Length: 415
Ligand SMILES: Cc1ncc(COP(=O)(O)O)c(C=O)c1O
Image 1: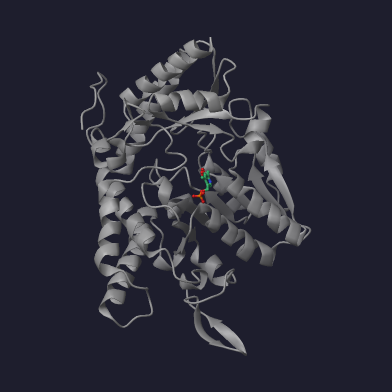
Image 2 (image 1 turned 135 degrees about the vertical axis):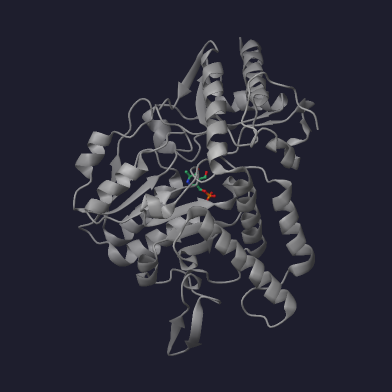
């Protein structure tokens, strides 16, 4: 696999990691692939693909309930993945790691289990204008069910939260704060430490939607002091259909299960059911075993490079991408916050983003177009959608050059 050289120096720990991702080693529409859609779903390194294949090939069986060797092996591998996740985010106990199908399910779990049982007409749930639909709709549903009110922290023209408004909105009438770590549409890194600290001072529980935070920076849930942190395997180089809800043990322990079925019980009779201990109380049914094993391998991979190296390298890529895109005549950048990670949204002249995305694809450049499941953000800017280039550890300066050249070509086609 050969790639052109770029003059800028890069971080040695990350420099060549694109070689580890087989999907990047291909031509798309007769061009080298420049994959700039990792915020939607990231590619998987060979080690993740191999770990899943190895499990499928030799170890597959159902977990937790078999006496035979394969079931033991599957259970060991599945539970080892939980331990890796615990270490990765520095949770204080493996009981705090609930394996889910992804961020969406993790947030719904909290809304339905914690929220539905606790909220009433006098409660306010505070979210922000930057949220992905996954951190809006579950709260709207629980508001309808309980009579609670949804309150939204506004944003400014750069796509940053208006912190003066947050300070005013965060009163003792707020029963829950649910905030995104990093905006998937604009790349804004929210000041979650400060927000959590302020919420904790009022005893308000906090959920962080970490779907776009976890692939790009080190996360320590104890240091953050959040109550819940939700994320997805497929955005951090693992498989789809698997994700995590970190929850503070005391809170999870007091929450009722939200799904019933096998594995989440200790004893069932027609007179009633005794639920299983944490975290199994929240893991009804056969889990995504291979997905969890793949996620564990993705964590090994990320740790072998180091999240600090990744964050530093990606920041350099993002700075370069922002600078180069900014030089294009007729481009408008959306999301220009001071603190950003890995994403740039834009529109070029009056080219429809879908048309732009299609022409870029013809040149091997994969970007996202549309509302990015953040319709309120689009509404704020009075646009139906944007084109969005998003970065991951395996991107290079050449990918960005290819993006810029492809946009230039699109401009010429539409001129
Ligand atoms: C910020 C954010 N939250 C939540 C989600 C939902 O993730 P999933 O579809 O993996 O559940 C996404 C996916 O794009 C996201 O970017």
